[in-house]
Image (cartoon, rainbow, N blue to C red; front, side, top):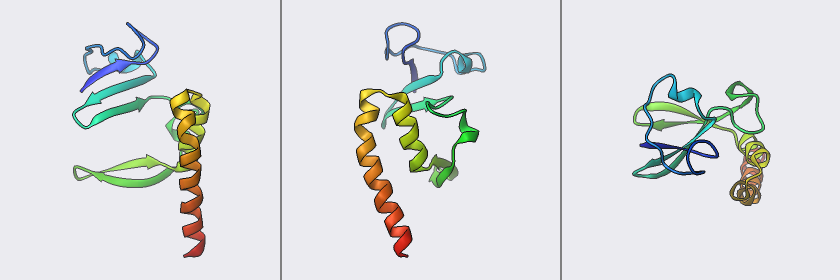
Amino acid sequence: MRPRSEGVGPAQGEFVDRLWNEESLTVDDTWLLGTRLGRLDVLFTPAGTRGFSDLKSGVVIDVGGKGVPVTALEDLIRMKEAAGRERDLQQVPTLRKLLEEWLSRERDS
């Protein structure tokens, strides 16, 4: 994986080689990682939050035998709206529909 900065460093979104150490983790708020499976966004302080302690865990998924908490849809919507980027705002209606369907299924069961 190669981290790239968004809005910080060379050109916005440009890949930069960076060491993976304590110091490098404090440079940017967001890393966009290019992986063989596609892009992975790492947010150190997600938009619209006071940090990870402000988020609810929606589900825990298994990734290589390790449980990885994934945020609740409500929090994901809040973060995307707060980020205000066009690509995030375009996803909000779909996420709201998914949330409505999820909540409806929970009420019906």
